[in-house]
Image 1: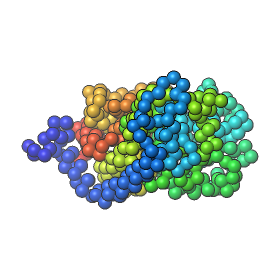
Image 2 (image 1 turned 60 degrees about the horizontal axis):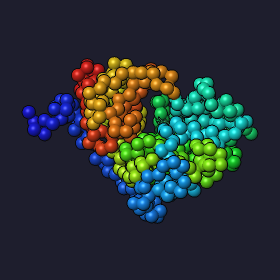
Image 3 (image 1 turned 180 degrees about the horizontal axis):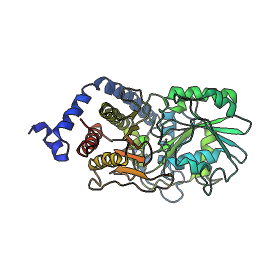
Length: 427
Ligand SMILES: *Cc1c(COP(=O)(O)O)cnc(C)c1O
């Protein structure tokens, strides 16, 4: 037995899969270098924001109760605002997830009689209830906010003609989703998003533009907030939490929009003044500090997965050699059985719950059964190595995360091992 492979064999990866993996990796040096370059500059950006705001040990003090005058919380919000180059930021553990952050941003900035316009077709699954596309108590529809959407054009880009037609006197907020979510379209680059923002604002200058930035943070040198987004919104258990944030969400944007979000999140009159940090604020700081390199590790994993699976006949979005703008890699596996095998491999590579077998289940907010593989330190964290997908055509898994590149690599190799052992992929 090859000594070098022994530890990998013990984890369950065969020599054949290891060798195939190494042959794929041999071609990726240049692309990985480009990712490291972006990470370096984003690291500098975060560092600059921390230095400018004089982050000190005093910022890590816990707070309880109302959380009045929580300097650590307020400074963290300044660090986010300066990193995203916005006037203000709302960064709170009380924001329970990405959907919650988006719901706060939307409901705080839409009034009865306003229309919300999505210009990238249907928004992310869980937002459909927030908007009221699928009826739900407390949806925007219930509050008298109407909704319209413009489908993407045939090549997955913005349909500018149709967008122009859809903007009317009621249109108050335009939503753009950077990452593809559970669809097979490409994700948008910050440049593309900037072009769309400029276009809609030219038609109607008073429009508020919100970008769902989930999974996109730190994959490029710029964020949507650098190209005109009034609100840039995401989850702390994805990229910007760096794997350390135990919970939370953020909204970076104009003072006016972010103020309103504060009132929506707590209560009118109270706004951002309240909100204790429960003693977890140090993890939000440290996670944000690590986020650029953690995101880079996850991105390398995504590229490796595409390069590994595409030659075996599985359609990948983005394609193996395509440019990417988030950390999500979708792979069309073609059957439920293959989704189960893939997810089993990812689960086996987890530091937590490696013994568990992921099975499809009904999840709140999703309209079909979903399978999820995740053995994460933070429950449900998808900046940690994870794979998930709805059990429906085209049986695509969405693979993401990996706090270290070494871990992402192992997880992907184990997924392939299960596919190969189950006769679902052939080397
Ligand atoms: C994850 C995600 C969300 C929702 O985030 P949750 O934290 O799961 O609620 C919204 N939009 C996109 C594009 C996402 O990837």
